Length: 143
Image (tube, rainbow, N blue to C red):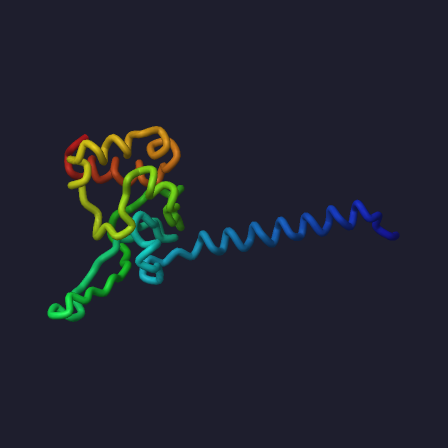
């Protein structure tokens, strides 16, 4: 029995969709903080659910050279954020800095930062960021 051209087309489209889903799932499921670049480390969550933190160390103090590394913190993110690398759009709309070192509550004391953090584009559109700072506030006894 021969397949019609529409059946062949549907079969081809289905195969492409399945392949794309597997590729995306694989890409999202293998986030290892220690393998992330400086540009994608801050605000990322590893596939194990731990938050990534950007750290620096002085390579040459005289030349003021620093080396940045990404490492896995002990801070847990929600299950829905496993394998999450924050988008540039969220970093911008939430007033974040990709070069932020560590995880700190200091920025929550800045009214301009909290205004951006609580703005609809950030609070509703960037759930990972909202979850991070809510967790930080709870951990610091601010909430």
